[in-house]
Image (cartoon, rainbow, N blue to C red; front, side, top):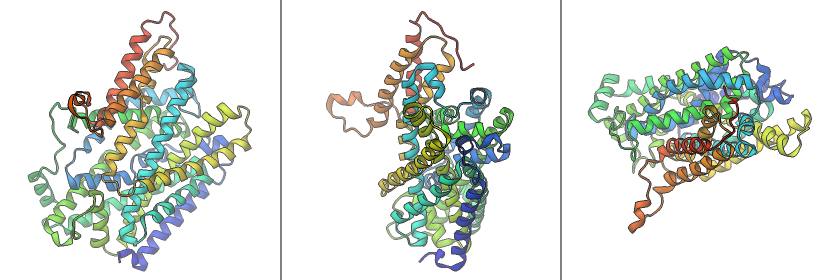
Length: 500
């Protein structure tokens, strides 16, 4: 029986959950108009938007999988965080001003104006698939953390966690999402720091011993510096992080929607820098938790469960269960809940927004009134949340959830970033060229992502991709842009670049 059998732990968890629902419902009580539901009347303060962007970055993927990665290997994934400042600079200089001037609800509407309707619906479909995978991964990781501590069944916990976040997102819209993000960001940062302090206190020799042991065992290394693109080297992870973060800032509806909630363009730019730069040190804290776990269990092998850990992601939850005092366990679990809810709520709201604007209003009822749009937004919110919950149930027993998520993100995101960048830099009439580039990109990404899973034999082994799966989005984006630019050069009819 875990610590959450104590009254104090249950009180902490219950109060947090009730307070989160209360904040979400209170802040979203006036969200009964479509644009209020999705952009909050452009009245959210800079600091709140920034914390919301930070909360989008930090999920249970970070809270559980990052310690799991550091516990099992090293700090290789921290290179992903090191790519954020460069991507943020590009976003602040180009992406945020562009979307603020555009003023569109859907981040993919401009792709239709630039390349045709196929581009809009391709990008929208990729985004919806990616968010389903993301919601599912987060719910799954949250459940495996809570299950051994509460004694609950993973399937039931996935369903309950999904239901809680669906409730306030369904009723409160983006305003509820952002203000609960603010609360959740504070809770998850506090929970992570408290847990780190208690963990260091329980390691013989404290932080100096953690660093010494980590250095001696190569646990603090960033990975290989070789120019080998078939392995997750420093260069591969940096490129992956750069391209994924450019995609987040440039064409991810949940980020673009937050740009529109800020009062001014200047405020939106500041919020992007705030949210992005906050994530770098906090991701370091999560990885340090993993290194501390390794050193702790090295000195206390008796605390490792019989048969070891089923997955690296289970190491941190086991520590919470067996080594934290009553009350603190409840706080840490509340922090894990916070990390999960913060990202899931944004994914649900942004996905529902696209369903309402890109599918319902664009294809089904162009002259939809506000009542019809609100009905669609709420139905879509519930549907997306349920879909993500079903995805989470399908992930049970999968090892290495972070790797699975990164592969799915690379596969589903396809050529979204390349298509956006092609429109940004190309002044030619590139509709057919962009389509050809996109199809080539999809095939390239599928080849790289799936290549390792195909049992190549004999002469066919020459067809195996030489790239690590993280390179899928990198190579796919570059291929799309190269093909698009080359074919665009054959066009004789230039058109103004509306992205400048």
